Length: 292
Image (cartoon, rainbow, N blue to C red; front, top):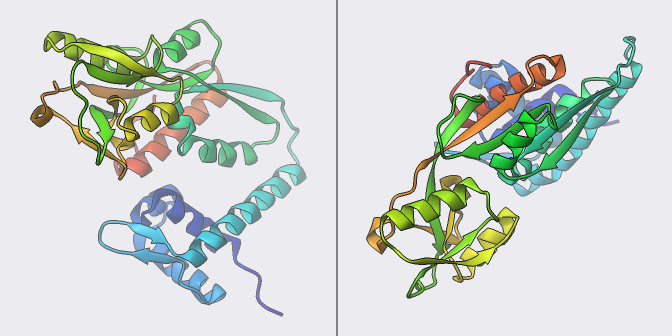
């Protein structure tokens, strides 16, 4: 009979796949880079396949690695669920109301929520997706226990996760439209929209709202089609888009601040906020950050 797969090795494999970095996975797991590498080698020996391709800049999954990743997540989920159900502590019914902008909700946040809730009996995480300004306002009104979003204007409210430039995005291979600058934006109020309009107005450049969508997917679709120019965080630029700037006659946009706010009186919110800070530090390569 074949030896069962070691869940400790699978846990390390999933961490590397999540952050695409042996060093980052080591930070998450409190292991050295060499220990992470050794565990991946052992897992590859167990399955008899190469799972990861590593170079000086990044780590990518092979086809076999992609296949194993789905099984690994399922096996670890079942393991966490079994341990939670067999736990001797009394289950406590707690609901944590989370609000997040779409760039977070469509990225790594759901996986962090899954891992966090699976290890805590009786904790329910409810997620609502909204625009940053609206999230911060609703948090102030008591609708959320924790929110994550972005803003352009500095404020002493909330804890900074990271800063990132806001840039102009347009189709990689389409010619620039003539006339008024056509914008693809979220509905008002939106920090990206407000920053873009302010920059164009100060530069004396006429503009028009050519496309409006409540989703990041819609905004990027308009930009990819060459219909409109979209103000987005630089990390949203993929191989279908190009960044525009001064050489195309467009003004510089401000830097975005990605922010988290939480209810410091709620232990579950405080603990989850610390988890978000640690995950952000791993993914940005900044090490452990100062927690709020």
